[in-house]
Image 1 (spheres, rainbow, N blue to C red):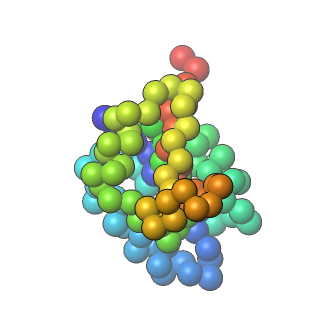
Image 2 (cartoon, rainbow, N blue to C red; image 1 turned 90 degrees about the horizontal axis):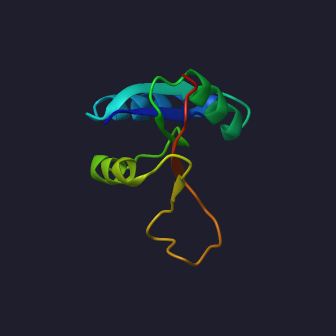
Image 3 (cartoon, rainbow, N blue to C red; image 1 turned 60 degrees about the horizontal axis):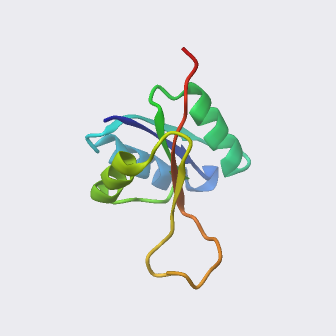
Length: 110
């Protein structure tokens, strides 16, 4: 199983975003890591998904780190058409929606 990691970075924190991108590059299942600086994360994630080489795409902010074991577990469980949202454990269910990262499978035309 291989995934594409798409990170949405803040240009004011470029050094941190580059370090986080390098960290993801060391994860065995990460076939590619794409770091984009756009005016909002949705634009970066859409652009990244368009050029991604893998069908399983993990999107996160440029300052978000997810443990490799958690990432592998999510990637192995997600099915085509599903979107999995990762909520920080310390927030629990206190907030209605606060996602730090998302993982999904996209169907690519043959």
